[in-house]
Image (cartoon, rainbow, N blue to C red; front, side, top):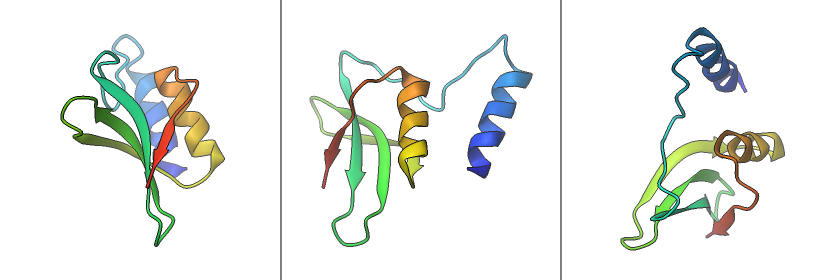
Amino acid sequence: MAGTNNFFSYLFKHKNKPALPYEYDSDNERPVIHASICTGEQVAGFKNKKTGEFHEVMLIRDNDDLAEFKELYGLDKVDKEY
């Protein structure tokens, strides 16, 4: 989680300008984890409801990464797609 520490350090230094890695539109996008059947790699991001375009936000290596993603964006549930 070395990248995580860098991100939170950035937020702390720039607390007057909090910025998420990606500003998503909850009306037009939904949170999704893309998971590979072959490798098991998981990537969290947001999928456009109309076009299906996926915007990658972060790699999910374990439950801590998933919890961080949910916390950053205030999410309760994230769908998984293969």
